[in-house]
Image (cartoon, rainbow, N blue to C red; front, side):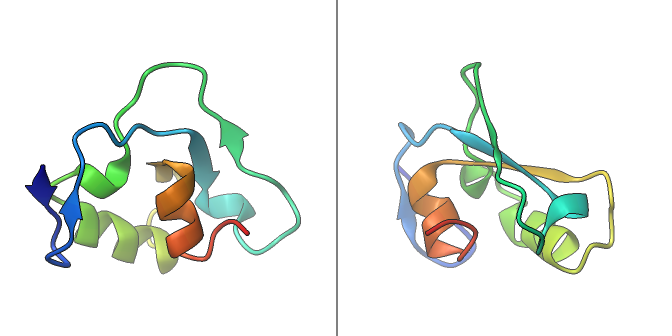
Amino acid sequence: MIKSGTTETVSLQCRAEFIFDTRTRGNASRPIKVLSDCMCDFRRPDWDNRWNDWSSRLDPYLNLFLCAAHARKLGLMK
């Protein structure tokens, strides 16, 4: 277990299931399914910075790799 910047405990078993592209955010496109074994970005030590850059579209080439649970929590999936 590790702690994210939001003081929430995150399991080390949390694996990315989807890729979210900042360029398609807000339109009807769906996230891309991850086919390899990748870590969920929510576990990264720089998560808060990545989320701020992605949500503000500061870096148009930044993609988020997230598990379904964290994507739902962030409002990216239903």
